[in-house]
Image (cartoon, rainbow, N blue to C red; front, side, top):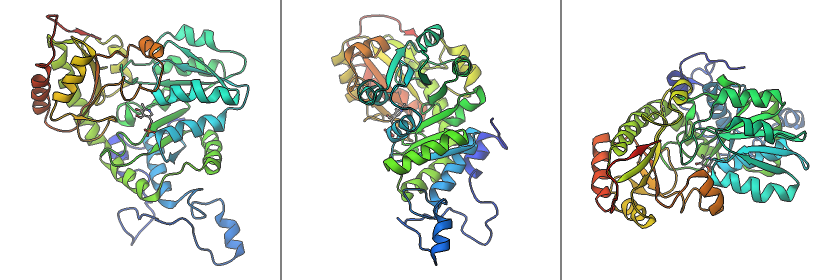
Amino acid sequence: MTKHKHHPETEAVRAGTDLHKKNGPLATPIYQTATFEVTDSDQQLRATSTDMFYTRYGNPTHTVAEKAIAELEGVDAALLFASGMGAITTSILALLKSGDHIVAQRDIYGGATKFFSQWLPKLGIETTFVDTTQYDQHARAIRPNTRLLYLESPTNPILRVVDLRQVAAIAKQHNLISFIDSTFATPINQRPADFGIDLIMHSGTKYFAGHADLICGIVAGREDLIRKIHETRTTLGGVMDPHAAWLLLRGTKTLAVRVQRQNDNALRVAQFLAQHAKVRGVHYPFVEGHPQRALAMEQMHGGGGVLSFEVDGTGEDAKRMSEALHLFTLAPSLGGVDSLVSLPVLTSHAMISAEHRQKMGVTEQLIRLSVGIENADDLIADLEQALTVVAGTRQHAQVG
Ligand SMILES: Cc1ncc(COP(=O)(O)O)c(C=O)c1O
């Protein structure tokens, strides 16, 4: 069940704070401690199940950030992890056992693909990858031992948009847990629980933190599922440092304004690239011609800050162009205030097979931009000058 008391802009700033706390600091304190002191054995017993026992189990700074994010997503509870990959791997290991089966969409983050295809089989857990937007394939791939349906929307790096209602309905019909990587959208642009998705994951490293200065993962959803994942997190140990949790909380307060600016800037950049003669295809959910634009506009409030495109040339042209940019820094990652550029074949999707990449449409000519909060005219001027290094063979870009 989803529950929103306020609009996302208000929740981003105000959610999670202890409103009963008076005569105290406005900013949440950092409980930079590994452990918590007690006065006697009775209190020790009582502390065990709280966030003031031992920081691998929980920490009050984590609790405030977790409550804030749960409220923003409109779900029961959330948990923080040392990284996005920590959130994915811990959750899967918490919810599945040997002999279970996963149906996963093909267009998911490369690290998740690697975990599903190379690590889980060692534990007796198999995954069938399905075409991301062919929902009949999802249903056909489900077996009696299927437990989980894994998806990402919008997808990295081709920005495909998944029909969340349809996927949630398939999962419900077959009694599967639906698990989305919603990193690219953030709860400002999309709240998957509103469409019936059970678990929502974020690489908090990206938009939530917002300043490319920490690594963090988040899982949010139903209380019973989060409880199991919490137990596993405590055992596997992938918790976040309290100081990083505090930075994450601070980032969350400005999430809405940053994302809205990034939505505006990325749309402007996508529109510029779509009409450029040296660009072959632009992938951005809200740009004219995107195959799922209508769906994106129905289920998202904005297209997000990431887009990708192919240069009209070779892989070498793509490398040259990405190196010729001044305002887009050549670095992996996304979602921060600084604009970044990367080549997915060398970064986010370097760890998966060339065959899998080809099925996803991740080519050597593909360039991914994470658009920051700078002035859009400056960013466009930078792209314009960098595109002059591309040889170019065609006159007009296609969009989609
Ligand atoms: C969509 C997506 N999901 C998950 C991850 C993994 O997150 P982290 O790097 O925080 O472990 C990334 C990292 O790039 C990502 O882009």
